[in-house]
Amino acid sequence: MSVQRQGKYCGEGRKGHGRNTRIKPIEKLNQKVQNFKNTTNHRYSKFVVDTAVLKGCGVIQMEDLTKIADGDKKETFLGAWPYYDLQRKIEYKAKEKGIKIRYINPAYTSQRCSKCGYICKENRESQEVFKCKNNSCGYSANADFNAARNISLNDI
Image 1 (cartoon, rainbow, N blue to C red):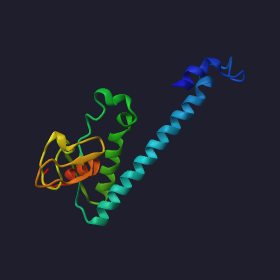
Image 2: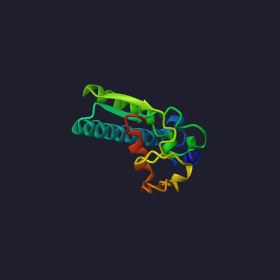
Image 3: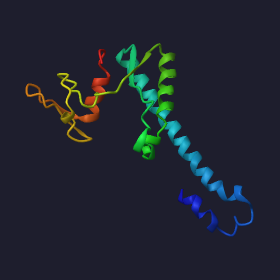
Image 4: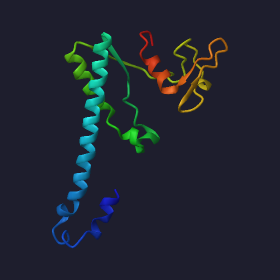
């Protein structure tokens, strides 16, 4: 972090008071980030479970995200996001409401058409755009929305 590198250039009030005094601002920022992540995960998990209760769903299906932070994604913000924590929060809140959790294999969920079931790598035109290449279908939607619809299917 840039704040850590600036520790050696700290103001006169922090010099000579030890390492712990110099890193207090860094620890304070780290705690704010952790609090933000925890609060956000609680909000999202509450929204997911409350929506499932409102819609009368007995099962919440989620991608198995155990390998989400592999490779190049480890360095990105979303790769470092605590997915595991979010899933645990959804699990315990769903259990309290009597809703089951099912994890699915996310393979091809972003390449499969949620309308006709046609799977093709070219269906995913970009990170945002999904357009089915099946001549009889031609369904078009936001790519994440399409993948979410696929994940919600019973027979996926």
